[in-house]
Image (cartoon, rainbow, N blue to C red; front, side, top):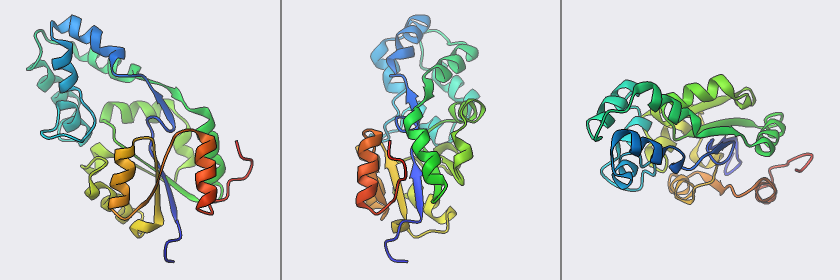
Length: 215
C-alpha cells in the first residue's frame, strides 16, 4: 500500500467546531474566585508544549475526571468555583459546527474512511456527542482523555494508528495547530494544516484525494 492514504483524521476544535477564546470565561472565573487572571490562565493552559502540564492538560489526558479537575482547580483558587459554573463555562466555549468543514467531511465520508482525533476533556466530549451531528460521518472517534495522550505526543498518534490497523503513513491528520501537524509528521503520519475549506480542498487535491462538489 505504500504511502497511500487510508484514513482521513480530523481535529475538532478549529476544524469542525468553532471554539471561543479562553478569555470567554477567564475574566468571569477570575472575578468569581478572586484569582489573578494570569495565574488562572496558567492553570487552564491547553497547549501541551510546556512541562509540567497544567491542570487543564491533565484533565485532557484523562488523569483527572471532571470532579477531580474541579477539586484540584479549587485548591489553587482564591475562592472556590462552583462545579455547575465550571461545567457551564467549559461547555459555553463550544459555539457551533463549522458548517463548511462538516459538509466537506460528509462528502469525503462517502468515499474514504474518516475519523477524528481531538485534544479534549470528558466534559467537552460528552457535550459534543450530545449536541453535534458530525460524528455520524466518522468511522472512528478518538479523544485524548480516553487514549491517555494528547497531540503532539507521538504516542497518541501511534495509539490511534494502531487502533485503525493502519501504518502511520496511511493516516492523514487535518489540524489547525502547526505544532500538532509537526507532531503528526514526526510520528510518520501525513498531515495538513487547516486554514479554511478552500485551502484544504486544494491541499487534498495535491495529495490525490478527490473532493467532489468543491466548496
